[in-house]
Image (cartoon, rainbow, N blue to C red; front, side):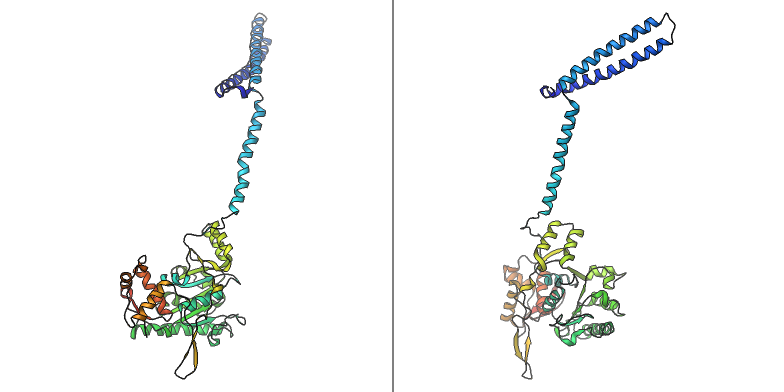
Length: 414
C-alpha cells in the first residue's frame, strides 16, 4: 500500500506509473495506426507492417501490466485524493464558524485606551461649540443642561416643538418657539444683534467680557430651525466668533450632515468650529462604520446613556448621578429677597487646588508657571492645559481671568 512507501519512493512510483500508463495507450494507438497503414500497402510489405504492429502491441501490454502492478503498490490514489480533499475542506471551513463566534464575543472587561471623562473640559480646551447628535430618548436634553451648567451664561433655548417639562430648568421667557418658526427667526436676529454688541464691547471697553453678558444658546432639532431666514447666518457667525464673545451655541440634530446644520457650501465650519458629540445608536454606528472598531461598538452598547463619542474619543459620564442643583445656596439680594445661586458640582483636585490658593491669596494673579513651581500636582501638564482650568473656572463664576494668551492668569475675588 502507498502508506508503506517512503515519500521519495512514492514519488518515484508515481512517475513510473504515469510513464507505463501513457506508454500503453501510446503503443495501442501506434499499433492500430500500423494496421490501417498495412491495409493500404502492397502485399509484399504487409507482413512487415503486421509484425511491427504486433510487436508494438506486445510492448504496450507489458507496460499495461507494469502499470497495474504499480497501481497495486500505490493503493487507491483517486480514493485517497477524495479523502484528502474532504479532510482539507473540514480543516479549512470549521475555523470560519469558530471565527464568527469569536468576533461576537467581545471581552466584557475591554476598555478603550483614549477614554475621556470630562467632555466639557475637552470642549473648552479646543475652544469650540457643540453639535449634539442623537435620537429620541438618547439624553440630548440632559447633556445640554449639564453643559450649560458647566460652561455658564444665560440659557436660551430655540424649540418649536417642545412638550411640557422638556425644558423645565430654563426660564419660561428664555424658551422660544411657542410662536413657531417666525418667533425663533426673530430671536435669532436679536442674538445676531447681541453678538455684534459684544464685538463693540470688546473693542471699546474690554476684551474680557463679563460673565453676566455670557449666553448659552440651545437650538433643538436644528434641521427644522434651518428653514428660518436667519438660521444660516446665526450658526455661521456664532460658530466663528461666538466663543471670543462668550456666546456659546449647542445645536441638536439626529444626523451631523452639513445640510442639517444649514452649512451647505461651508462644511468646513462644522469640522473646525464644532465638537461632535454622538449619543446612543449614532455613537455605535460611528464606531462601527467610520472608526471600524467592533470592540468600541460593543463597549458603547454595554454602557447605555453614560457612554458616547466626543469627536473620535469615547467618553464615559454617568449623568444619572449628576444633580444640577446640588449645592445650591440661598443669598439675599439688595432688596432682601432670597435668590438661589447654583454652585458648580464637585471640582476635581486641580480646580480645588487653584480655588484654595485663590482664597488664601485674594486678588493676586495666579499664572500657570507659578502653579508648576508651587506644586508637583501639575507636573504632567502643559501651561496651556493649566490655563484651560483658569478659563473654565472663570466661566463658572469661580474667580476671573486677566490677560490673554501666554499672559493669561486667574485670580479669586472676595
